[in-house]
Image (cartoon, rainbow, N blue to C red; front, side, top):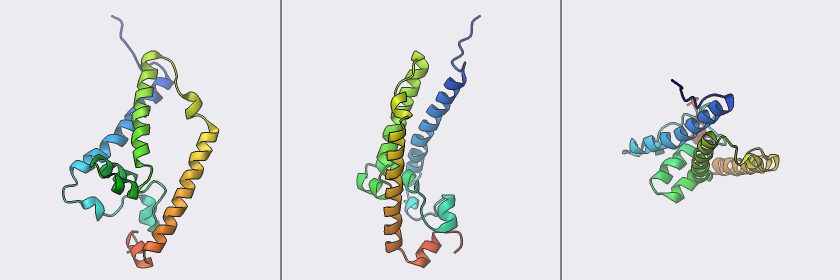
Length: 154
């Protein structure tokens, strides 16, 4: 009897890991939304190691909350937590579709875009600029005591 093995190469294994990772990124905020009946996401301590150590948000802080509020239909609140939240959903959905198609057809798509240095540098520059602006606004809107309260030091 001949077995069908879809995981016959390292590339396919990595694609499957990518699909699983993208699905987890989409599902975990959805589960948090289901268990957010008392709106505890607004008040709970962040689990970000950088924010716990310093009191300042890291570049990725707020993406999970952004996805939760986007799932609830509150686009403005979603964007207020992290501007890239909606793009994360779009990227994850596209990744699942493309990687699944690559496994099925045994062809590779979008490699020119996914491995484009110019695009990577542009996105990196955007994220750095966005984070600097976010930090400036965070410092302006919070006192030193409020910042330290976000960390584990108080």
